Structures are given as structure tokens and as C-alpha cells.
Length: 202
Length: 183
Image (tube, rainbow over all chains, first blue to last red; front, side, top):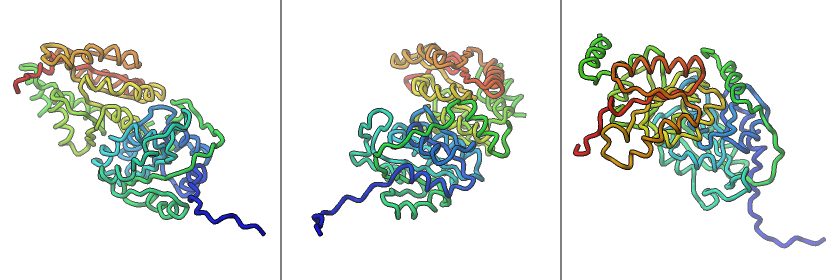
């Protein structure tokens, strides 16, 4: 029996699709906003719902769409899933959110350290820029970086229940994923979302 | 009543328009007011910050406000974005999102780079404000008479909230007053 030479293998990175599905499995009635690109496809792959609002553009805006929604619906948990490139374009949002202190808002960055839609160029996080530390520095109530399946399980109560604003940076791999496209007509996405949220003025 | 007093003042010396605009925003049930400060908006910002029914949201850059107000609409609240004309240069790509989704967007823009401007660096964006907004699909109305600011805001707000459009009320530098560089 031949034995493979012993070498410390780098820990396998989380699979983004499974990670997003795991987070959303426990979401309950949380409202979801996704940033453009892969986080939108990941959320659609986990199951389209009317209380998902997918951004197909507006790069850098996902966290603030989440803030406006969280302030308008303080009794509902609001979850933002976005990418590292998208978050980097709106870093000032972290400061703006921290000032408002929305207890019901959680931001999860699905961080593959790449611009996935444009040719997998490295983002700043590939060079060590620490988004969770930036959220902490801004004044978020809680923040962490997730690298392993057990980290992810530990972070789930933070994402879904802890007093916010919460920021979770989740390091994931770069394996290609099947494209799962949700509806893309803006007024349709807007209207169906508003109908799904009780207490709307129509 | 403060409103009536404010209106009288506005008619007399042209400084009561922020109080009138505030009353208009209250009548419209605006709940989220986002802003990057401008001297011309100082009084309106102060009134909004003092009001318990309005969430005042200072921004680090103006495009955050476009996204915030989109989120407010998704959650059933009306928002307004206050900024200086230079901020219009920061928001263009985010306006594409608001336009594509037909988000209502009410922007109140105090102008620089016009009437009596002393800072040459303000002039290019002052000149570009209207064409940039219109190129992005925003309906623009400029007011140069302090007595007409509040009524213009109320009328444009209907286009925003009822007709689902992006609108901007440009409050002319003649209304705001040219900045005194010695101060």
C-alpha cells in the first residue's frame, strides 16, 4: 500500500453556493437584499422568493438599500448578502450604517477575493484588506470573519438573531458555479417585494 | 403657528423657505431624510434632526442616499435626499438603479457655482448639474424665488411618490445666498 507523502494541505475554502444556502435555510421571515453578481445568483439558486430583492446593478449600494429597508421595517430582520468587490465600492456605507445602529440589520460578504463577473481579477481583500475589521472600526455591534464550516455554524446566530448592525465576512472558494438567474425586471422585483412586506402603503 | 410665521418671514426676507420645505416634507409623511451637509441646507437639516418622526441619515457620499431611499421604499417609507450640486456628480450610476426599478426619488439640491460664486472649482459641477441629472433620467425643476421653493417641492414630490419618478428641485444660489469666502 503506497502512502501519499505527508504535507499540510491548506484548509479547503467554503463553497459559496452551499454557504449561502446554509445561511438562508435559517432565515425565517427575514427580508433579503443581494448585491449584484454572484451573491444574486447564489440567493436565486437557494430558492426565489418575493421577499428577496436582487440588485442587478447599483454597485456599492446593497448595504444602504439594506439600511433604508431596516429603518423602515424595524420589526423585521434584514439580511444583505453581497460580494467583496461590491462592498469595497461602498465602504463609506459601513460608517453610515454604524451611525444609525440598526439592531435588525446583518451584512454578509461572500468574499472570494475576486471580481467574479469580469474575469476573476483580485479585489483588495486578496491582498489582506480586512472588511470585518473595517466594520468593527466603523462601530458595528458585532463582526467576524468566517473561514470554516464550524465558523459558519457559529456565525449563524449572529447573522440571524444578534443585535445589529452585524457584519460577517465569509471567505469562499473560486470554483465556478452554475448560473441561476432570478427575475430581472426592476418594477416587478420592487412591486412583488412591497406586496410581500406587511404594512405597505401599496 | 410656526408655519404661518415662517411663510411671512419668507415673503419678507427670503430666509423662511427651509421651514416651509420642512412643513411640506412633514405633510408628505417623509420618514427618512438623507444628507451630505451643505450650508444652504443647514436649517432644513436642523429641523429634520429635531423631529422624532423623521430619521435623519448623514451620508459619507451622496450615492448612499439613492440606495437608502430605494430601501426605504421597499419597506414602505418615503425618503428625501438633500445635497449640494457637487454631490450630483457622485450619484449617477446609482440613479440607474432607481430609474430601472422605478423607485421614487425626491432630491433637493442647493446650487453652487452660479450666482456670485467665488470658488472656481465649484463652477464646473454647478454648470453640469442639470444636464447630468437629465441625462440620467431625472426630472429637474429649478427655483430662484424663495417664495416658490416649498410649493415646487410639494409638486415635484407628487411626481416622485405618486408617479414613481426621480425628481430634483434645484434651489438656486440666488435663493441660498452666495457663500462669503471671508467667513
